[in-house]
Amino acid sequence: MELTPDDVRDVLRVLDSSGLEELHLELADLSLTVRREGAAGWTAEQQVLRAPVLESSSAPVAVGTAPVQTQVGEGLVAVRPPLLGTFYRAPQPGAPPFVDVGDRVDEDTVVGVVETMKMMTPVHAGVRGTVVEFRLGNGEFAEADAVLLVVEPSVGRGGGPAQ
Picture 1 (cartoon, rainbow, N blue to C red):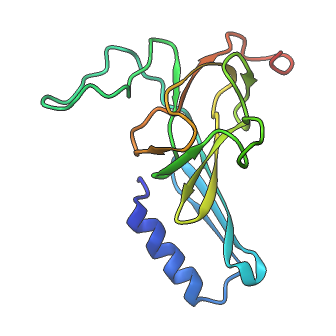
Picture 2 (picture 1 turned 45 degrees about the horizontal axis):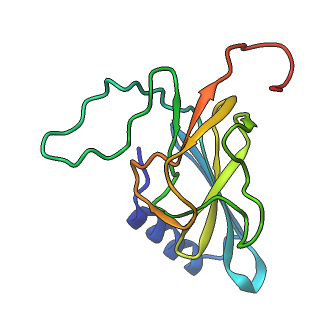
């Protein structure tokens, strides 16, 4: 199941009219937690993809569509936005980016945020490896199938943390 912007709006509408302080939603491929932060309303949201989708450059492209860079090279992992919205590489204007090309990440590393309806949703790498490319720039709109960045997974599975 995939959440659409309309689904998110419906959830927020229900939450605003309820007395709930927190909502935790578990789906097959993601976990979503939204908390009420006092008078400010719903300001904290977290959505984590449970498992990255490995894609190869041989993935089919729909006939009649413009070639959008939604594919990645074989063995690489595409990090996609959890929701439609504006992608930011840093937590605030003027701050250093969460990660850059060449940085090592693990499954829980925040690599950016997506702003949807004035809510910031962290984007997690979802895989252990090295950032090899950013496909979307800071402040650009992220469609549902957009590739925000590309990670080359680490070869080793066990042992210590990524270096």
